Image 1: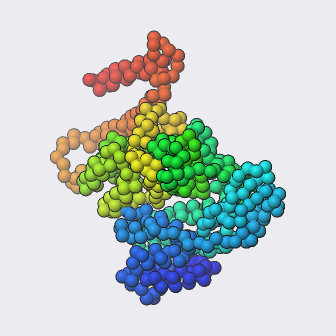
Image 2: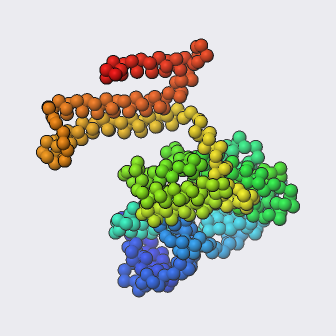
Image 3: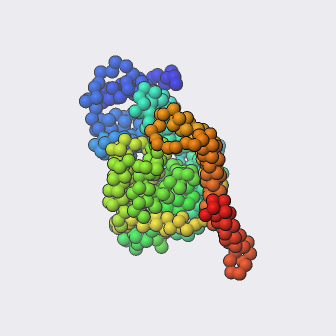
Length: 537
């Protein structure tokens, strides 16, 4: 990957800033400079934080992500980076007004009766204004800033280049997937620049929460919204962080935490689309202990496989199963052998389960412990888990503001129990069956060759074993046939395990049982009879 020449000027600014704060050597390692004067000892955690803040929103967000990666950096650096804040001066309304009218395609007074010129929110990507529609409806308008996009795109291109270079120069760096980490950062930032995506996210989350009468999501006026401007309902509520206001309004903190946690867990474990930044500023307590979620500029999406892994993670904690937890960490790390965790990892998982499976789980502390365990065991986590863990820890912290006794594991238990009892969905059955059948087929194809190779090595004296071979060829053929039968049996077992619960409930009732159950009973009796005859049992 070549260095983007059009970004040379921005690169020079980055090099100068990092060198000023003692971090020039970092850029050398990433292939973004040479002969820089700093040594590793010149950079401190505080200086790194100050350098990232000076470089702007992309580097601030990068540092915020790194602050959650305690599997990569130690606590001293992570604590310093967790204090990162973007330093942005709000643009005057005179500049933002022109951008608003360009996005609307008309003078704003044809849509709004009033727009307050002072922003009620200002960030690196955009600014938010209070307004009223012509019919008097209170709304908020989010408008992207015109002065940031070019520099942000340049920063993302340079980070993509640096990540690719660092991975190419160091296998140790490559295993932590820096390119994937930067891609995740770039995807999130570029999504924030497209307010059409945020509008769609908001409408999707509103649909997902339709079965939760106590949860509210702001309405979006799609006709007025575009890439650079979004109009949505203004919701007036009490922030979860304002305990005095909650009490004055007669609101019940624990009841609110239950409403918010159920909604968040549903979006995470059922819908697989979740609010990626549920901090106290993005939730409002409403009358009658209702809860509002706002600002869906960042949402996370889980694949069905990742959703199953997350459910396995929660099950391991709920059921206090350290071995299952250790296996999951190995799977997340991409380890080849996930069946037999190393003794040190299983012991660490046991300590983790003992500490966190008790009532009153502090999810933020638990995730920090996971990151430290991963680092100590020399494992690596995929970057998409960072967004997931960060969102879970943030939601846990927000709910604890409402209810200091809030316990995420207790909130997750109903979903875990439901998952244990639920029949798999047809599409999940198909996916699992396809995966299992593919693995079984591959085993059936490879097993004969492996057996032949083993017999060859045995005949050449390369395997230490004491066996009596009457006829090597006969045994090879018998073992090959057996391997194919095993593979077929595995596929059949996969069918029985996945389709059995569905088929057992199929058909009309016969003598008090579904027809499918009778078919299964007679099939089982016939199978046992056939096996006993075949194997002379």
